[in-house]
Image 1 (cartoon, rainbow, N blue to C red):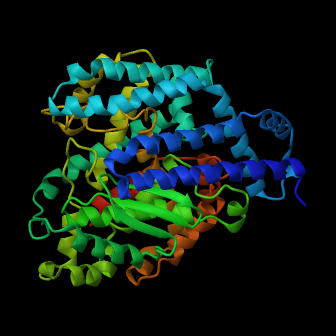
Image 2 (cartoon, rainbow, N blue to C red; image 1 turned 120 degrees about the vertical axis):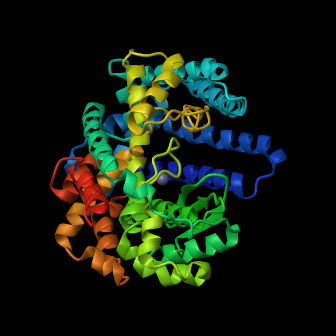
Image 3 (tube, protein in one colour; image 1 turned 120 degrees about the horizontal axis):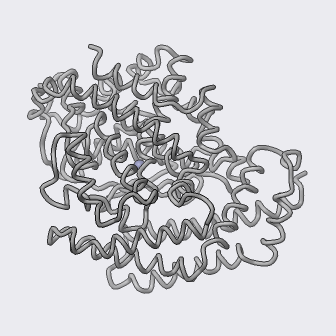
Amino acid sequence: MSNPKVKRAIEIVKEQRYYDSIQGLMSWDIWEGLSKEGQPYRSEVSGYFTKHALNILKSKETEMLVGELKELDDSAFADIYEKAAVKNLIERYTKAVQIPDELQVEMRKFTAEAQRVWQDCIKINSFEAYKPTLKGLFDLKMRVANAINPHANPFDVLCDSVDKGIDTAEVGRIFAALKVGIKDILDQIKDEHAAIDDSKVRMKVETKRIRDMAYDVNTLTGFNYDCGKDSETVHGMCTGVGPRDSRIAISYRGDPWGGMFTMLHEGGHGRYNYGSHPRAIECGVWGGVGGAMHEGQARFYENMVGRSYEFIKYAYPTILKHFPEIKDVSVEDFYKAVNKVTPSLVRIGADELTYSLHPIIRFEIEKEFFNGNIKTDDFMELWDAKYEECFGMRPKNVKEGVLQDIHWASGHVGYFQSYTLGNVYGGQLLHKMLEKTPDLYAQMEKGNFAPVNDFLYEHIHQYGNSAYTPKELIVNATGEELTEKYFLEYLRNKYLKK
Ligand SMILES: [Zn+2]
């Protein structure tokens, strides 16, 4: 019999999740069905539900309950899922009362306008024109951070709201080591990779062919389409509308392999969304912890599974069924082609090796800003200098430079670390999986994904939006503190060992 206070907390959390589901469905439908003229009414409806959900959170009853819940010790919880629900309610309540309504409204309005300005500035290739908007955005984020915790470093606060329990100093150290390690690998393989001829597999085809192939390839990994649906959109994403209802949206750009890896990536998010333990659903904490852990699951299926030689060998007959035009390309050549390392100025579509450097650059710039060392006006100069340092190239325009990501314009500051950190989590989880199942990749080559899927379910997915912080999940799963060692080891094995 659950503690009555815990029981009430679960009821409120579940109710909040119902509101989230409505919002998730409505935002997914923005790409699926909403007409242009339908947008103002949709915003009105969305605002109505947001207000209702917030009213419940900010009620006297929730305030009192949260005060009482904070006094509970672990003996009040029947299991880890009840503890997660209580933690979730306390976090939601705290967030709702910390950031004043006016500031939240201001932020929403500003980012809507900022995204428009961002698009215009890309068109006219002007960072100069974007400067006031960028300054406004970062100033607003500073105010948000100060509202949440006026005593902490604002960058720590913002990163923590994305990746719970994150230690940005530690992440900075991990990233510095990664940068050195990745650049070292890159220096050794650059010329050899530049010589790889991938022309036979490069093609532009219609969306339907890509989608049907990507769907079948994703199914091979054990992705359950009874718990998820895919569709086409302008940018890739995955929304967990319900505990067994993951909506995958993919932007197909004519490149079959880009589409295939995106499906595997979003499929990783999708699995984490639908893979919660029944008790996590009963307690309203299904769907996974956000930020780096979610990214880590996606990047694991995209790269550590999807781009591996063994998986590609297993999937190749399926790929050829849809793309007979590459039947003369051997598995080895196909593997090399889709793993070709080509340093580029653009994050989206970057190869597996150099990808991690892109978010690191953004993380470093944000950190410098919040530490008071630079102003937003300096971002472009610093950005270009960092690309020169990492890749030996400088952007020719803002589209391939400082304005390439929508994140800042949409208010996602303190977010970029998630991508690279997700890779670090993946490397550490993979190392442990291999310890447990040394022939993990040989199993994948035979089509057996149970060792991967079961491991991730057992240690990560079942807990849903867990009571454990991402760092605790990693320590529990691997028995070690977070380290970049294993991700670097994975990259070295992949690119340097023949
Ligand atoms: Zn992702």
